[in-house]
Amino acid sequence: LVARMQEFGETIFAEMSALAVRTGAINLGQGFPDEEGPKAVLDAAVEAIRTGANQYPPGPGLPQLREAVSAQRLARYGLSYDPATEVFVTVGATEGIAASVLALAGPGDEVIVFEPYYDSYAAVIALAGAVRRPVTLRPVEGRFTFDPDELRAAVGPRTRAILVNSPHNPAGTVFTRAELEAIAGVCREHDLVAITDEVYEYLTFDDAEHIPIATLDGMRERTVSVSSAGKSFSVTGWKTGWVTAPAPHVRAVQTVKQFLTYAVSAPYQRAAAYALANEIPWVEELRKSLQAKRDRLITGLEAAGFSTYRPQGTYFVQADIRPLGFTDGMALARALPEKAGVVAIPTQVFYDHAEAGAHFVRFAFCKKDEVIDEAVERLARLR
Ligand code: PMP
Ligand code: GLN
Image (cartoon, rainbow, N blue to C red; front, side, top):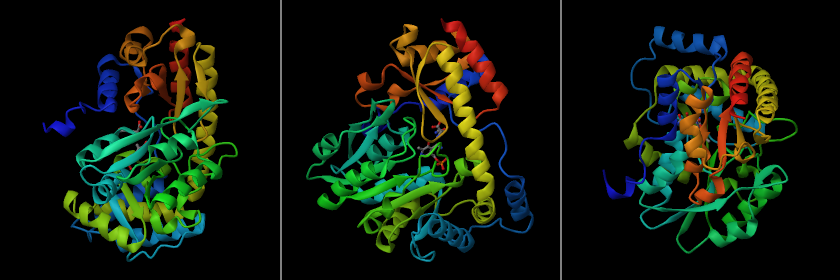
C-alpha cells in the first residue's frame, strides 16, 4: 500500500457491520434504513432493466436524470443549473466528492474539513496528495458548531477548498445561515471552492432548514454541490448521486470522474429520475417518521444513562459515554456487542484531534421502532 494511504485501514463501517453480523448484535452502526423506499421507485428500476437500460449510458449521466436534478435544485432552492453543462451523475455522493477533491486539490494543497468528518473525505484528500485542515465542531448549548476564528485561522496560502457537510454526519448539525455566511465569507475572501455534501438535504427535523451554500451571495460561482438518491429515497445500495456546479467546475470534476468509473449504472439513473420527479411527498413522510425515531432513540439512550445531542438532521445521534463511566468510545464500541448486543460507531475515528471525540459514539435511528426499542432495552444493561 502506498505511503499516503497507510493511515487508512478498513473503514469503521466495514469493521462494525462485520462485528454485528459475527455477534448477531443489533446494528445501529452503519447508517442504512431497514425499510424499503417507495415501491414505484423500486418498480422503476426493475422496469428500466426490462425495457433495455442495460448498456453504457452517457458518461455525464442520462439526460432525464440530469434534467430531474436541475428541476429539483430549481424548485426546492431557486438554484438554476443547465442540465447539459452544469449537472452530472456520479456513483453515489462518494464518487462526486472524490472526483471533486481530486479535480480541485493537488499535491501539497490544503482542504478544510469540519471534524468529526465523514471518513471518505480524509481518504480522498490523501489520494489527491493534499493535506486536510480540520476545524473542530464542538458542543455549544447542546448543538455542535465551529468557532469562525478557528475557521479563518485554518486558511493558508495552499488552501483550495472547504468541504461543507450539512446536515452533518455524525454531529447532526444543520448549519444556520449565519454559520454558512461565515464559511462563504472565507471562501470569497480567499478565492476558495466550497464542495458540499448534501446527502441528508431532506432529512431535517423540527424547524431546521437545509440551506445550500450555493444560494448565498457570490457562492453559486464557487460551489460544487453533491447529493444522492440513497438517503432521500431509502436506497443506499443504489449508489446513484449527482454534482451541480458552474460549467468550468463541472468540466474539471467530470474529467476526473470519467476515469474513475466512466458512467453510472443505467437502470438506477432512470429510477432516480423518477424518484426526484414524483416521490418528494414520500420523502416528507420519511422525514417525519425519522424525527419520531430520533426522539424514540434519544429517550431510550438517556434512560440507559448516555447523555445525547439531539440532531437537527441525518440518521444519527451522538451520545456521550462518560455519564456511564466510560471514556474510550473505540474500546466501548468494540465491546458493546458482548456487553449489550448492540453495535455503534466510535466517532473518534472521524477526528484528527481524537481527544475532542474520544467519548462519543454514534447510534443510527433509521430503524424500525421495535428494533430501536430492543436496542435501548439492551443498552440499559450497561449501568
Ligand atoms: N456523505 C455522507 C455525510 C454520508 O453519510 C454518506 C453515507 N450515506 C455519504 C456521503 C455517501 O453517500 P453515497 O452512498 O451516495 O455515496
Ligand atoms: N453513510 C453511512 C454512515 O455514515 C454509511 C457509510 C458507509 O457505509 N460507508 O453510516
